[in-house]
Length: 178
Image (cartoon, rainbow, N blue to C red; front, side):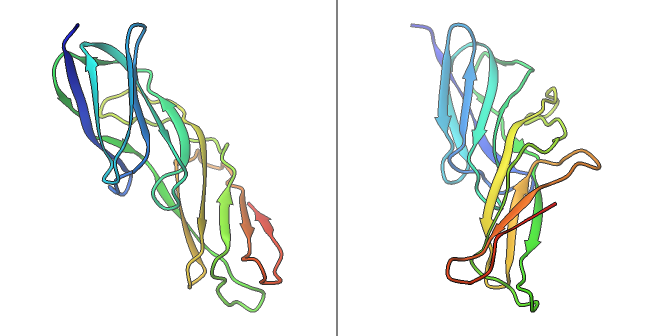
């Protein structure tokens, strides 16, 4: 059996917050290994030496991360134990939901459908940028009517489509906005 090495680190968003439950993987024609990040964003992949493609899949997590999938075009060479933190370059979109009288609405669901024209990103220092797939997210408003969504930066003049669903029993209607 070939020797295996560890590829480990912490996966964080653009604000430095660890991203839990993300799938981090290394693969090539002869080997692949995928792990989920811990609650602290940590990961540790055991894999034989070789050159691999890095792929990451995140689940929508409000202010922490959007749902997306990224496979980096630049290869990673593993020839020994490697520690490499990864950063998903997110920006936070803050949305305030108010009723017709200007009062905050608590418990409303704010979501974007994804598909915005994101700027190409890289997860590694010096890596080649790639356009992510996905970028949908959702969050629930707090007592102040505020929801925060982590999104990938979009190109200038791109449009973000938001849907707001009020809490059940509020007698308010859903809204879509740009």
